[in-house]
Length: 222
Image (cartoon, rainbow, N blue to C red; front, side, top):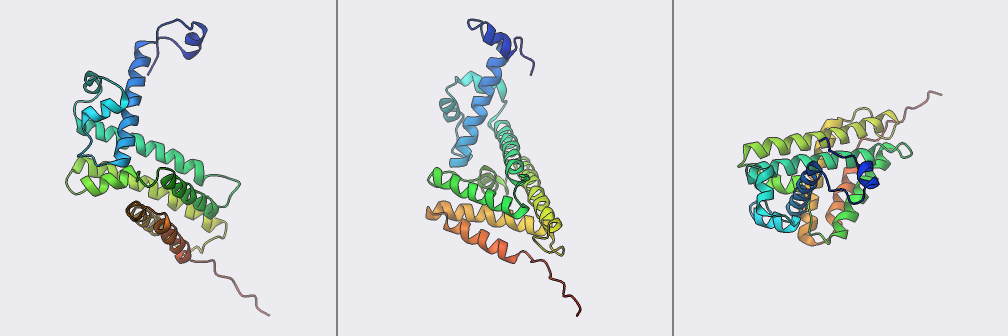
């Protein structure tokens, strides 16, 4: 979006009015963030438009200025969350000063820290919506599956690097293990929320690393 005034121009003129385009973008951002927070905590069915507006601190007209329906809003929230999480995965998994599996451990620990910080009130937005809407809403199902596939590919790339550096054996089917990781991870998050404990996440990830094939040590002939 092109603003009529740049940030530098606005800073140089502290009393200058905020550009209309900038105000629109701020309102849109507030709506999307509010929807994201709510769908991490509650169901899509229970999220009313009025509740989103109240959380965002905006009027009813603001919502329908941007979205034709609640469904369109939901899809935009999914796209926003998917982009946010893809960037988060890259930030953690692509750290050059840690090995591939160390990066994966760091991602897991950050996830545990997150659910504990929010006292198990929040889950994964994509996992929550997949449970609620995956079987009944084709449009949502396609967006949710696309998101899971993008996350799966990032874990597969991480495991490929682990093969390249000798952390796991080259026989590992990285796509299969990546799919297994996300299936188990999402299930562990649900269980953790139910039990109000991070123990299910820790148990799953411990077993995940155990089943990764270790590199075969070649025997040297005497």
